[in-house]
Image (cartoon, rainbow, N blue to C red; front, side, top):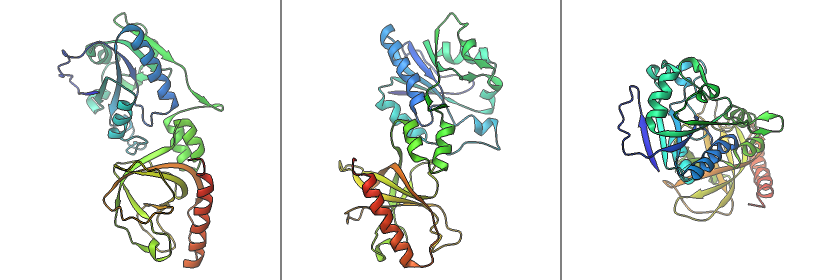
Length: 312
């Protein structure tokens, strides 16, 4: 997969790339709605003998357009998104730097400079895709160009709601992990490195791996979760219970941490790169009146999580 970074003004030499069909969007999370768009692109590319491409942006447009609601944490941070796109057998990823200058571009200029200029012959976009200054361009506008064809993909619904990155973030923020995973089409996952923690867990019979995320992920809400975990260069899928929170039993104003108690595991894995897959919510974070109630709660969490993960 070739990653082609574009800026404004667009001075990237694109003479060596081949014509493509391109899926347009930000694609944070690569959820089922995004996969619909990408699958349609791949179908059209195969039919027309074109390269398979994705055109996206970095950073999220809200960083430039909406300082009060700017999105600086992601379901799939940039490097992870690139990795997942490569797994989807994409040939080209056009990454446009979303700057203040770019945000002010006329919609027609964007099309001519970035879509036509990138040798895109088939455009595939979701029904609500917008582009150009203040989002003035729509899929209807894209359909007016003769230099390429445009295919509109309808919304992917879950129940009576549209699957969207915003909704998935809301699910994660409200302990609705099962709903988030249904919308993603997979268990939410976070990559990180195992770092030294307070080592309190081993003193109470529950040694944990303290996970420092490698990127600015949108974290699930504070609480306990049934998870699986993989360790780099190790094919084993480990099961466990994860805690996200500030350890209120011991601290007043601690930073958010993620710890995983791995079942039936005794190795030291400091410095290892791991991926945590979040499967089910167990309970919200609580402040306990002493060590004994905390031990009982963790033991209960572990038993619940084992049952939840029986089919993994």
